[in-house]
Length: 102
Image (cartoon, rainbow, N blue to C red; front, side, top):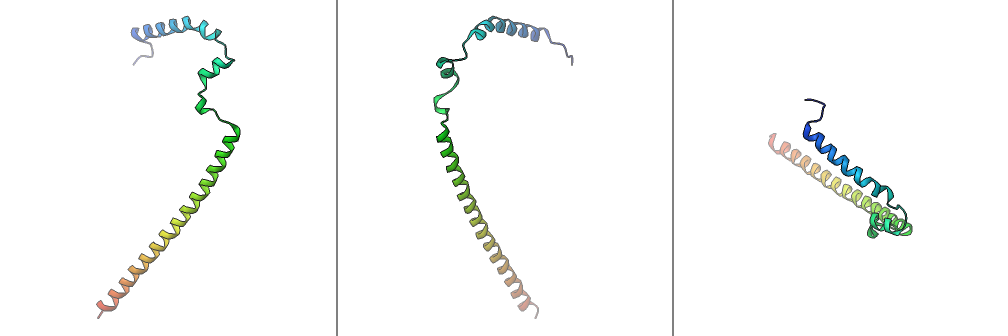
């Protein structure tokens, strides 16, 4: 494997370089200020208003707190189910010991 470019890669590189060299003056002379630039770069649906963003963050934080409460509730329920099953299995072990050791 050689570090040198193959002829095809070199041709491709040269053609891309020529294209960029041809387009460079256009891009350098394009104004970066004004409404035309921002209308091309920023999509209105994704622009954020600071007050709307604060409201959205507050709502999301409330949502996370409620989800956390729900998860803790589910943990408690599953712990009770597990303890109940462990208790039942212990009862069945005691039952089998009591009546099979005769």
